[in-house]
Length: 139
Image 1 (cartoon, rainbow, N blue to C red):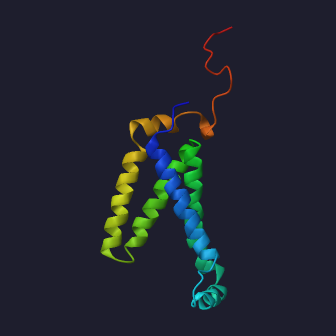
Image 2: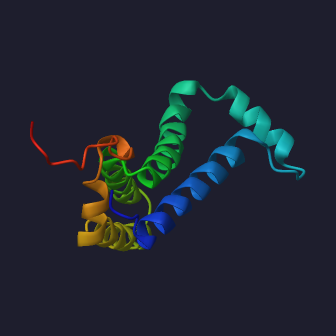
Image 3: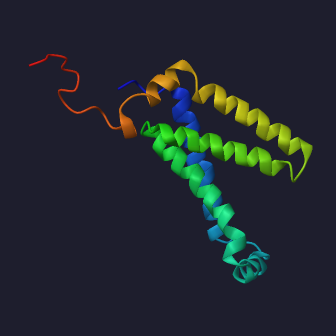
């Protein structure tokens, strides 16, 4: 199995951290006077309004965890996550579009460089090859 490039390690941990913090920020109220109002607002919101938010945060953490394990599908999940956020930023401001597009470009560069491609091309599912898999002798 190819060694994990440092850029993949950094990207993975950034997404694990940001996704986890975002999930915690939505689940645990912030200790301030408006926290009670925020809890009341969240309680009155319909789950159908919140599921895209939670799904996005879970996708960020999931892609980070499984990219550390070498799963190629997790790399593509991260790309899909970025594309979703670039599209979503069109609903906000041009600055957000530019920032998300630049981050997407940087992610694409690091996720598809030759060392990263070799790492993700390793064993399927990120597991090390079974013992004896390197043995090329024939019977």
